[in-house]
Image 1 (tube, rainbow, N blue to C red):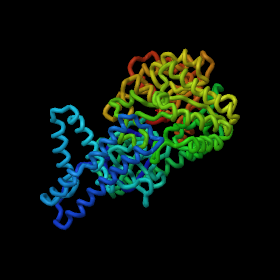
Image 2 (image 1 turned 135 degrees about the vertical axis):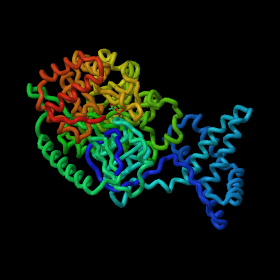
Image 3 (image 1 turned 180 degrees about the vertical axis):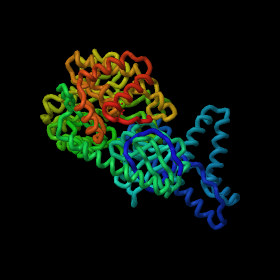
Image 4 (image 1 turned 30 degrees about the vertical axis):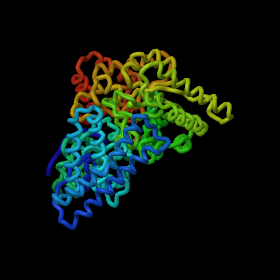
Length: 584
Ligand code: PEP
Ligand code: MG
């Protein structure tokens, strides 16, 4: 048996056989072939070029794809390179001469061509080296594609193991058959982790080398809560984990008994516990776990999938479905937050080419510079407002200008509908996510322009302590209890309360029972989290009082180091509520 330690991304225990997903950029295979295989290897190359050409053409032809003129030029250049007769001739000749597989031949030819271009005198030619590199990757991707199993429909249960799982892979995976996830990369608040939690699939990320150490068919235990993975364990360990699995199930059933009870502190403060969802179908789990509403619907997951952007009708149907399913409970739909680690399907290939996407063209910034996409979403949202209790929320607001411009656009969309006599709800609360430190620092100003706040700690922490939330190497610095973070949260809550608006939190911190008492003590009105987390957070809220939580926070605020605060919080939560230590 081998044991690996990683980042606890989604709790629970899973056991089963490994299904290894090859990396998107696997190493190039090299093997000999016989004379009679030359033609079929060459045919594989021809098919791969055709596949790559088709991919580029379909990217270009989709009317709803947003392509800048630079992107179009880039794709045209790649098409020209794919049509260059020189490359097939070389491939055919070297296949015959070397009698090795086509991937190996292609890699040699491309490397030689790229290094020739890179050392050219002419700047234009030098720049073409990166285009050729892309073309080479595209053909290679086609050649190796068949090796990557399709995880959207599996014939048997599996534990997915891979280097990194993109959110677009996670959203499309077979959620019944995938029992657990183990990856080399990723962090606790990466979107893959968030999706794993949403789908209640135990996951451990940031394991370093798990994809190299395991093989298809290996037996694996994922201990999502402890951030531990066991490879090929002995019988007795399997028996032990089966027992623990059953105990966990029993505990969950116990907690579910709280569903009908309110999240009210011992001294009578009623706190709203809501659910975060990524896909409309999750409303069942939200209702099933006693959610008081949807605190965050990450609408961008409608956009991260094959087949281009969803049109107004498709979006309208999705929003209407969620609103109707939730009845009169409030549903907060967040406008598109694409970018960062959430790339539009296929964007990862054409990309926006940003060096620093986390600080780049994402969320409201992307929407305000793609007004057509934004207005389409707003139209769908306003129309859907007639079917339930809608609230609209804007992500990554960093200052007043973005908010003013956003509200002005919404006003225009509303006026257009009024002129056309399209019915829309008379009052739709509009709130913002506080997830950029500048927004937290001017929260008193923003509060006057918003109906509510929701603190997005996943981003607020990463931007405050300058730690990429998805980078396993610096995950130890991602500290929710950093005094800087706590001060910002307190500042936001105080600003909201002074302005008389409600303040919630929809970052992962809200769903971690370790922080419940801290957040109650800081004065948070609403918590929004993956549905399965609601019962345990509710249990803590019902067993504490605001007065004792405030005293507790008072003591924390006097401490200066994150580790001191962390240790104190863990000890208190363990003593009071039996919340056991979480290694991450
Ligand atoms: C957050 O940043 O805390 C948040 C809820 O948004 P997301 O995780 O989608 O970036
Ligand atoms: Mg965010």
